[in-house]
Length: 417
Image 1 (cartoon, helix red, strand yellow):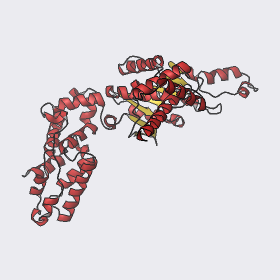
Image 2 (cartoon, rainbow, N blue to C red; image 1 turned 90 degrees about the vertical axis):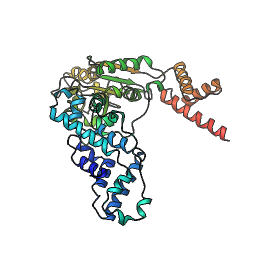
Image 3 (cartoon, rainbow, N blue to C red; image 1 turned 30 degrees about the horizontal axis):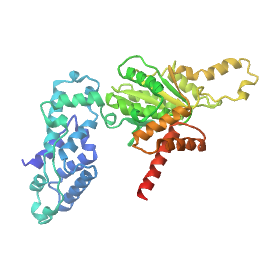
Image 4 (spheres, one colour; image 1 turned 180 degrees about the vertical axis):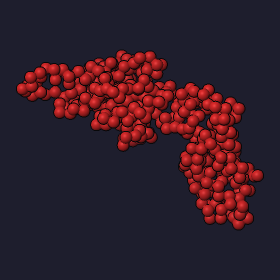
């Protein structure tokens, strides 16, 4: 049996990792190998589709890397067991099937364009067209596949650290249509890029690292003035610790009644999840806050051990209250008010991000200027930054960042002029 035909047969018989054939490039490659006995038109169509996808994904010179990397994102019996550190529970038959699938993927990654053409039944009908067909390079597989004898152990280690399936490929999700939709392009903000509020961020970071280590941790409420970096703190923490098994699922407030559905999907996943509720507040008539109270404490659908809730709000008391709320003819009005105002108390950790004073604001401007490589007359820069804040109605880290971006744009114009 020739190499390309052998590779096609081996991929046909994938068992544990059969799901990789559903991935776009892998599937197109498999379809090409299955077209070795098809007519010229079908064969050329499969060739062009495969090479086009390979180029679009940036793998035109490394087929082996592309195919082997697909295994990272496959959710199967082995990857789930490895993610949960329970590979030892697999039967000898399952282990043998894993080893055989790894060998098949490794072999398929070494097939060249010439190997495929050599095995094509109607090669002679292609004539000179065969020489003009676009080629690809095989390259090397991912490191975990380089040594076939150690590949199962290395793959298992990868799954333990990164999870499997979509949890290995993505770090952030949004709860939508009763499912977790991956965020294709998450915010790349880092902790080092956030200037100021170190005490507040340290408290949130310490709570998060304790959570990742299995130490009892608290739900967190980050509250305070707008533009002070509350949401950015959560995103930066995700970017810092996702390699340690942290994932974030953003859940809109109006979807809180679906929390039990979310719990069902992540309770058995061997990763740590932060359920992120951004810009949280409720009107006095909005009784959905009862859903959040139940989620935080006392509901039948309790949070699993691998889950915490992080919420941000511009208000310390999450229920919007008016003076008219304090009047009325309710007999036990004080009890009702205490119930609404106590919601924020159910977060074990509340962290205040208040608007910075002038000195702190200018210190943030200095730090951002240094980080962005903005070297100019610092005294003038700070005067302009203060004027920028006055025009925009107040100082904040967001305001400082916007000013720095504007200053960099102006400096670029001057240099080009």
